[in-house]
Image (cartoon, rainbow, N blue to C red; front, side, top):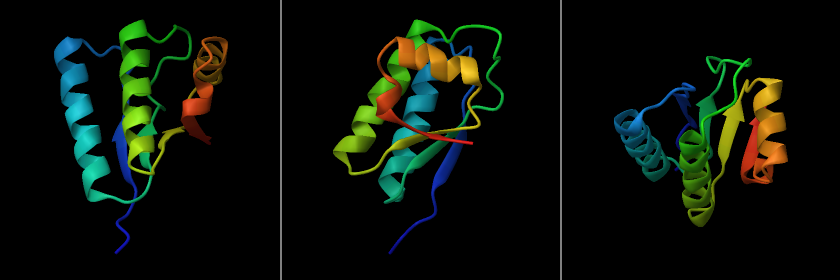
Length: 98
């Protein structure tokens, strides 16, 4: 049975507790779906860089998704976010969607 793709909203400034909650929600979405988990990045401020802890959280989620045969899709991510991820050498972990 194919479950619909789960879409979560990513906010740029996630403190420690917010990251924990986000990881829990994303992992729960991965467990109930056999498709990619989509992260809606439209609320991410394009003018500022993504914090290192948030990047680490996203890479951790992307690796966990890959172990389950899925991907993390970054939807409507601002161009500077993708440029930052490419410069860090981690853009390949994600499926970039408009």
